[in-house]
Image (cartoon, rainbow, N blue to C red; front, side, top):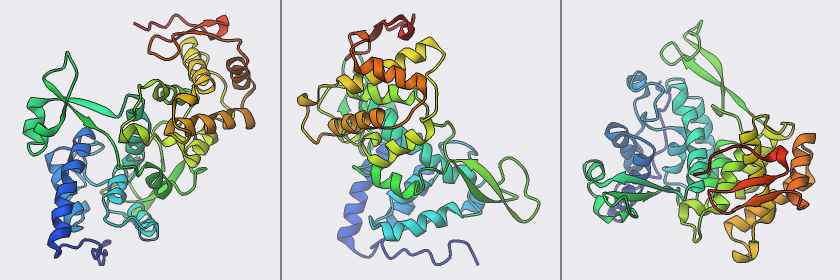
Length: 348
């Protein structure tokens, strides 16, 4: 019996012409995201069959294709996001089934976690907008290339794609990461799908990190860059993950006992991030705006929870007016004093 035999495709209403027409229209938006995520034409074709018809990839046949690359096909994030149901009771068992699929490669299951952080943190910090040459877009995305927003000068030959999951980042996080204390996962592997060592038996298990790189205090710098981005925020930027409770708790779980970086450049960047969190003008935003939510949550976490002594000292300095910062709300920001938090970092 095949692993996915009996997979419930009843949520795909393929005999409903109106439903299929709407789904095909939605695909145009999805394909833009996949292009940003470096999914090539073959990968996008496989993912499209899942999105429109519920047809799963043939993992056994595809296990050697583009190994370890983001150009592989249906990862965990896309499996959950592109499913027609938004019912967590439907998707939670499917999440577990996907993770336990012995015929998928380990990165088919885990690359989705890194993609979520890209969409939910890295992209919002730079406006959730990516630029691509119009000549490339016309080849890769001919149906939508002409409708994409033009890039500003001097990038007249480019168009911009907004990177987002239609406001689903928090829901996807909760589905994908049910236990925020979990940092590794034990996954089934076969002789075809092993990573670190060949299984001793037909099927075995290996331990994998849920993130290729753990969160650190440095992650605050990326969060702080999001606070600098000019308003108004688009759909992608508005859905920055760390405005929500559980992702912020995950960051704390990783960083609670971490000391301030020894490298003066990173020490300055962490200070700038904390300074921005405590000095952000929430009055310039709506009361319940994404950034207002994040700032209130981050301020409470940084002041009410236990951290390492060196980081608590940094927080105190940022709060009590001891720190002097020039141009804090643009990319030329520099810490001028105290000297311990300054660096020779070039900002030009």
